[in-house]
Structures are given as structure tokens and as C-alpha cells.
Image 1 (cartoon, rainbow, N blue to C red):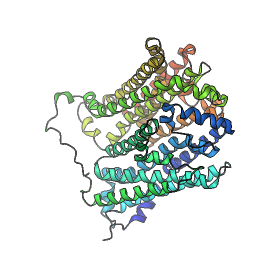
Image 2: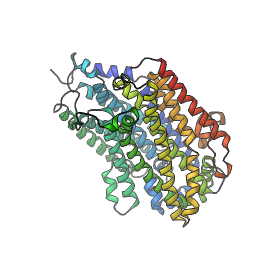
Image 3: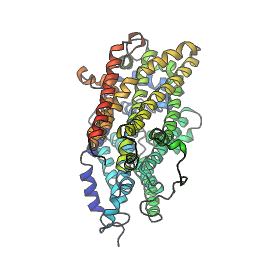
Image 4: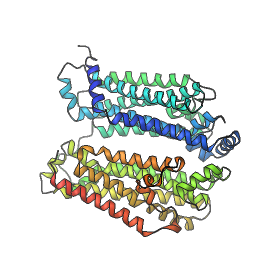
Length: 528
């Protein structure tokens, strides 16, 4: 039988299942990229301002590491410089999640076994997932290209920019396809693909910041930034990304035939025949499930804190000579000195990232339920509330730990840069912890959806995305205040001197109420 038979039917099924999710991904990705491009064009309207930002970034290795170098002072090149990281992150995550959902996740849940019992070839599910992700990336590429060209930027550079983003997404769809053959559970596949993405960012960061520029050429993210739209227009970068994608897809197709259905090529290590005494309760079991994730996130937060803390003092050079940028930073971080505004804005972003962990940890409850691992636990003397709280505790404690380690690392790094560790560490830690109530509100949303409407837990990710967009683009686009107030992060005090207990108390009350509603709903609904 043809191993690709049934691919068309599976594509139609995937389109039906993703009829809401995928259009949202596409519109958010293209919309955010274009909104960023529009705001950057307003911030750097003339040649002098663009030359100033190019000089500032070029003379600051830390800023070059984060954003990449400004390779040209044309309007389009500056736009591409600023939106490259955001666009790369969105298209790669969209591709990874799409392929993972329609390959390993369906296989893990047993849906592919039912489909495989019909006239469907062995390679058809993966081919359908890859074609779906490829189509989504092509749509994103065309929307970005048309949108950039519509902002009076040169058409050739605009289409190169859009196609580069699309090709990068296709390459990481292929990465996810290979990862789906290696691991036998969804979380590990996501972890492998995201690890490849993280390594790509690090290689690009180190290569751009230091003398070993060749490292950037080992990174697909680095290739994206080296395409140089609106300047040299290196179209061959698109071909390079697609070549890598084709090679990886070929590897994935070969690996499909070398493993059993439902298994991965890398077998998980078998555990002992009997559980140890340390796994005698739901809390210890939850710790076993969450500890690896907490450790990985902590490392990332420490690196992030050190990186931003070390550049906080020099980052003010980026805005001192540009009143437009200074105004935006002050709107995001308050009206104090620019360094305080910069630190507050960065801490707000760190809090949003901590919210990603909090949502992920909370929704581990849903994955345990759908994988039928919750039922054996609940069949014992463990109540639903104890089971849910065992995971919720680590979502809350984990968020606290993430913020603390990030604040500690940032405070020490910043204190060293200004020779005042003792004076700055306490201030930075305090400014970090005031972000906690808003982070817990996001975890509360996830818990409320899990307990009351488990089919719609994806709404917690949607809410977090909305909060992120409001925080990143709201001030620049002059979004109405009533809409900004939708985000709990809007109500976090902007300056230590302006801290008021009222907003923090109300945010904490809302977080607790949402979690309590979720727990109450869990007691009354069916499991599974």
C-alpha cells in the first residue's frame, strides 16, 4: 500500500480540528510583526535617528547580542532588525505545536491507532501535519510580505522578509517531525524542539556579541537575520532554510519506519518495580513530575537576569539620544530615570515569562487527566482537591522561585555594573516580587478553566497572549486605557516609590478567587 495514502483526508481533518486555533496563530503572528514594524517606523522616521540606533547598537555588545546588529540604515532594514526575534519566535512555536499536535500527541492519545486501522499509509499522518504547518507558514509569509510592502517599503525586500520567516517556520516544523520520532510523549517532543530553538538563539547571541561570528552561521535564527532584506537581499538564505527542512523531513520519514507505533526511537528508562517511600503522596508525586521543568526554567531565568542586569546601565544609552524611544520606555516603565524605566519594563517581561511556566504547570493537571493517569491516583484515598492542589502548589511556588532567581541574578549583575550590589539588590528584588500577584492571576485563569470548562483550557494561553500583546504594543500603539486594564500586569506598580498595597491586594484576591472557582468546579464535574 502507498504509505502516503489518506494524506488528503487527514489534512482536511486537521483543518477542521484547527479551524479556530490555526487562524488565530496566523493572524496574531502576522499582526504582531506588522504592528511592530509600524511602531518602529514611527520611532525612527529619519536617517539621523536610524544612524544613531545603528551606532548605539554596534558599540554595545550586550545590545547586539539581544537584538542583533543593524546591518543597514534604510527604513526597511531597521524594521527587519527590530522584528526579527519576535517574528522568529512566533513562527517557530506555531510550527512546532502544529506538527506535534497532529503527530505525537494524536499517537499518544490513541487517535492515530484508530485512523491507522483504516486505509491510511504509515507516513500519511506526518505528511499531513507537515503540509498543514507548511501551508500556515506560507500564509504568514504572504501576509507579512504584503503588509510590509503596504507600509511603503520596497516590495523585493518585503517579500524576502516574509519568505524568510515562512522558511524558518517550515524548518522548525521539520525539527518537530524528527523529534516526534525520537520521543514517545508530547512533552518530550516539545522539549526537544524548543531546546533546538533555544540553542539556535544562543548560537546567534554568542556569535553576534563576540569575535566568533561564525557561530551565527550555525543557527537558523542567525540565517534569518543574515538575509538582509532591503539591503543585500540574500535570497539564497531562503533556499538554505528550505534545504535544511527537506533534509530533516527526509530523516523523519526514514525514522518513521524504524520504530513501533506508539513508541519512540529513544526508549524511556524503566523505573523500579516498586515506588519508593518518597512517592507515597500526591505532593511527592507532583514534585517528581515538576522538578525537571522547574530546574530547566530556573537556569533560563538566571541567564536572563544576568544578561539584562549587566546591560541595564548601558542600555540607557539606547534611549537618551532618541526622545521617541525614551517616551515609549517611560510609558512601559514609569516616569522615573530611564534606567529604572528600563528595569521595570524588563521585569514586566520576565513576569510574563514566569506566567508561561505557571500556566504550563497548572495545565499539567489536564494532561494527567486526558492521559488517564489521574484516575489511578484518584482511585486511592486521594481526593480531587488534594490532587489538584499538589500541582497548583508547584505552579505557585515555581512562579515565586522563577521571579526570585531572576530578580536575584539581575540585582547582582546590575549592582556589579554600578559598584553597588548591596544598594541595588534589595530594590530589584522588591520590584520583581510586586509582579507576582499578576502572574498568579494568569495561573488562576488556567485553574478556573480546568475546573469549570476543561475543553477550553487553551483559553489560558490565549489570555496570556493578549496580556503580552497589550504590554508590548499597547503603549506604542496608544491603545485605550480601558483595554490596557484588561491585563493584570497593567495594575502592577510602575515604580518602587509609587507602590500601593491596594492593586496588589486586589490582584491577589482575584487570583485566589479564580483558583477557588476552579477547585470547586473540579469537585462537581466528571473526570476524563
